[in-house]
Image: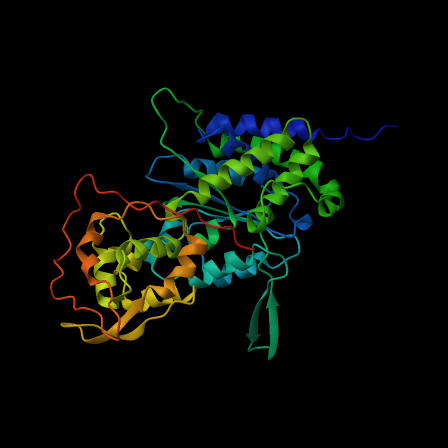
Length: 409
């Protein structure tokens, strides 16, 4: 008597690809392949050392992000979907060696600008849970003992706008777009279409679960390095197991989507802050903190005037720059500032060299402060003659080039 036929991984991934594109218009073939491989990887979570996040983001409503999350929910392994959950509840839901796949819809309400720092614990959980064996330690008052709570689990987040940069740095990022005229999809009805999609999820399970040991030993050749390689390795391992054209497609998707993410100027507030500070400094040797903040917030295209909901403050500025070893000092300026807290150019140069590309043309709003360059001696010329920044920059104003975000280990 012969046993059941061996599942054909290539055919199963192809079927998942066809199902995905039936209900959703994704922004590119590479994004579609990435989502297919991410869904498949959820069925082999015990094999992975890292749990890649899937970030589904859109600039506006009605771009298909929630519909894509519907299909992900129907085809991933053991989905746990929520639009608003306490951090403690998520911790308790994850706690196992074979965790659920966490799906967070409307994530912009949790991590968006209006949320401020209210959900830092949840962000910390999602960051820690990217790597295995990074538990949270809590004191159990009832039992008078320390409790170790697992955080490792694959997670998908859907929302409007970018997610926190620490999450996107651990994620496969898919930027959804509103469907153009002529782009059509089939309507999705959970009661009608759900059973067929769950059958597809069962096929993924039957193919991947018997291969957990093989996937755990896999060391695929990666086209990426550092954290990006950690994030994409499970997807590439699944692609290699499927064979046929999927190994090449998986690696191409990894390179393409990672390049898109690294080229996104909004992916790191700190990197953008470094670049904008360089533009504000111009060729000054030092600048008061108050003037630096004024100039940063004068740019209507930068996030600083509304940063964290109330605008960039001296304290928030110091916190962001502290990661690069940059701190304010008491500096002697001329009138009207006299001795005041400020920043020196020399403290920025190493960070600019390491994290920002070569500067482009100097923006026009820095021209007004060029005459403030320092002179020999302990004093710097005063700021009393500096005209206020324009309310709106000229239409032709050149913006500084946006940096590419470096890989982090």
